[in-house]
Image: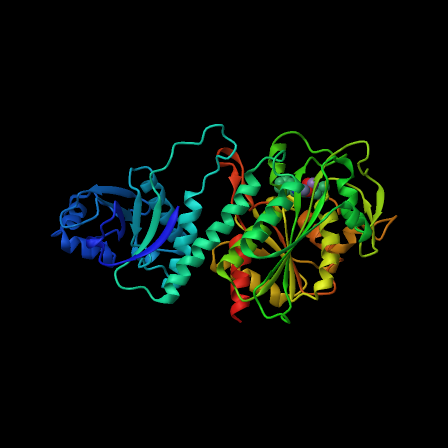
Length: 494
Ligand code: BES
Ligand code: MN
Ligand code: ZN
């Protein structure tokens, strides 16, 4: 798909399709008004006849509208002007794109940036347009023997009645780059675990590095043993797939400026290990590397935008399998930090690979460290698929991440890390236990991680509920690439 901006009056746009918005009660957006005038009231007549209701989310395709150069005009209903929210904007935009995809139109020019969203300016609307358009057109058919029907639509443009400012162009492009980072995260998530192995992720990281001039280093199990990553290595013991520790560096900032470190959980399949999971929906545990996917997707977006900032991506990646060599409940391992861990449940493996990556991150003297992980089913119970769980040892960092997510509509919710919860992960036999029982499962997992993140500002995103959708629309969402990228955009500007 190509993305572009087209300037000029909507009625003069020589495109296969243009998209116009209008509200209930005959309230037209400026572009719809301009087309109405050029067509001598064609739209007003349809509205008066009741055919164009303006109800929120309705789409009506008009052909050969008089006085209009475009072959098709897609009218999208925006509901009541006073109710038009960010959520409505995103949803109507996605509906419009999907409605055009069902036609033979090869290109669409959407006059949507002018839609009056409460409290959001043109810049926000342009970024969201790029992001939502890419998101809505994503599909995954790499594993089908024959690709699905070829789509006619090849180019999505936003239409601007007047010449767009450079800032607006950049905002739209950023939206498209965000979308492209999300698509990479989605592809990696949707690939099955027999394709997307730790070695495959390492290969993808190398390709990304080559395409965007990043530094990349892939450590193998021998290197990890030398680093004394005893906790990470204990998780990979039960599998034949070699584990990898991927280190990516994007240096867009000043050489002395401290990097932001992103750490992504890269369990390419989580069976639970000896603490085996029940078989229902176990296929979804191919998504247990979504944190890793989001780090790669974010680095891609950041590199495409050439943000003036330094970012390090760390990805501990392996499988969690039962086997003759596998770790067993009650085993005690020594992490890279020196802290010993009693593994009471081998299914709480994410924190075991992340803790060594958190210790490894110390060498960068980072500005901040954010880890991203499909860490706990308990987080899904707490927040569902709407918000990611956010934990931090620094309230300023937490607020920056919350704001970045809220702004780009990839939201997180602040959860507590109070001392009281640490009681639950006390171990009789080691420094810490890897599980804290059923109550507050997402919180105790974060508390575990916090013990390895004492030397810098740190935040943890539990994305177990937000990284993929289950059921008939099963698929990776590409979250939280928008949140992370927006955080880095804001940091690079400050
Ligand atoms: N990858 C899972 C978390 C998960 C489960 C995410 C279901 C999304 C849906 C993680 O490794 C895990 O198994 N966590 C356990 C922890 C428990 C043993 C303390 C869980 O949540 O059940
Ligand atoms: Mn697990
Ligand atoms: Zn897991």
